[in-house]
Length: 505
Image (cartoon, rainbow, N blue to C red; front, side, top):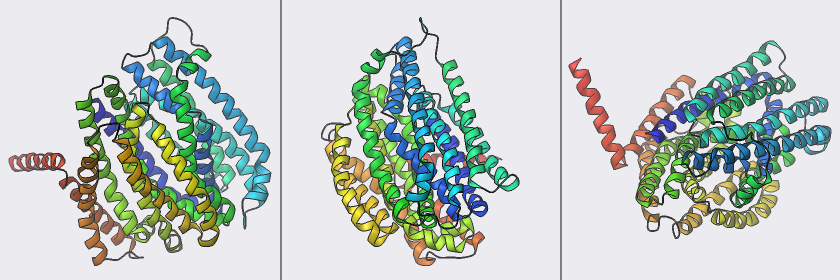
């Protein structure tokens, strides 16, 4: 019941946040121009790279909070760990902000290929961006702790309010104050400070008092060093694997072209937004079941969650891959934006889908504290990724980066999952491939493929395209659900109940 409640809360919170974020992107581009919007994409890129300095703090804290709710660790330990990580996080944030501020002019003049924007505007925007990035980095500590404490219902409610303020306020600032990147980032900084205060207060109120005041102690850090150390390597490799293409493109492409690629990355990121509520909600349950060595329940939870993850992202990925231009035009009403961005979006959607269905197996490995497999596979992938990108991106541009990312995820799917099931949940590999993944994909494709034949991807009437996409998306979702027997049974039961109730009325 708690897992179901958390999943629903996560979908509400992150769904609304995602819709707000995507809905306002065309408005941002309208006021800022695509070249200035590329700085917003750069902001997201810098935040992602900052995960290199997370040092495993956020996943470790989330895991320890989940262990605390399971009664494994005492409140004094968890309070001391929180205070210790807060201090470390604040020190890193100050260093990062100072470094970015000092190097803002150098980046604007020697790294980014600015065309229309004044270099001084880019440098000023990056100075403000540095402070916002530092604040967002500190948010991660409180966010991960609240999730680990099973405070996901409250967290998502607060996130919706703050996201509305962040996005709606940004549009108001651009429309009525100044349509500049500096104004945009100043508003983001204000909302980030407010978020930090709100999340911090809620976390401290949710934790009971400890026998002694919380303080920084090396002993608590040493006690979690093994898991945190493995997560450092995992975080570094995850960032390199997912962000190195964007870093290279920010240097090799004009700022405006980089903006189009980041736009494709943002839209395809909807897949992660859809699957993240499931993985966030299930992780504490995985931890508790792994600690109790309840293999029977863990096996059932694993497959149910994997099926749900695939059912919700397969239709979205199929639509993005099959109708990228139609989606972009219906969303933005901008024919040039849709035409330029569509090819990269289609390829990234496939790569992100494969990465998305691998998130449930990843959470299982993290729940057991077993990160060696992920580290080894990602190191091998990175050895191949870097030289491939350095060779392909200068020759073929953004599409090469998207293609390499997708190929890398295909290799992970074929290599990492079988190796995982040699140790965890032995004998469940083919059930995952066939029942958890292939069935939902087939259900979605049975709807999307005929739709492509009847109406190929392209620029059509905006409202008609929107209706068509909603119809096909709903059909693809229904197709995926019907391919999973337990979900099909629940759907039929709900339908019969609704029909009977309607007839009685």
